[in-house]
Image (tube, rainbow, N blue to C red):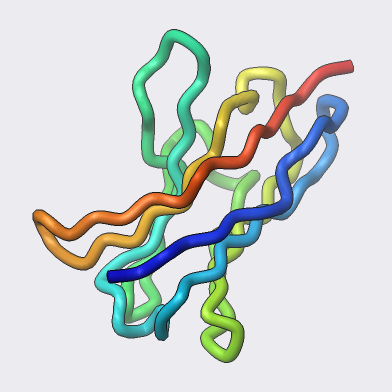
Amino acid sequence: QVELVESGGGLVQPGGSLRLSCTASRNIFSINAMGWYRQAPGKQRELVAAILSGGSTNYADSVKGRFTISRDGAKNTVYLQMNSLKPEDTAVYYCNAYLGRYNNHWGQGTQVTISS
């Protein structure tokens, strides 16, 4: 099991930056994959970025070159640095810890709003 606590959401103008944090209740290197998902009103939840236990990363095409996922093992924390934000990035962002097919954990979500 793992508990996830997110922080860092807020209201930012287009072109601005935010950094989201997700702190896990266990060693993040013991987790198969950790990721950030987002869900906008009326839309399905979608993968934004993920980092595997070995360190490899992948990103949604819509955020490549703008978002960076990283981690700090000493703090059991995964970050999502979001730059050049656009109004279409507005969503609730969820941290995810994937431990196995039937062992998937979610944070409570943090609102990110991009608006002038």
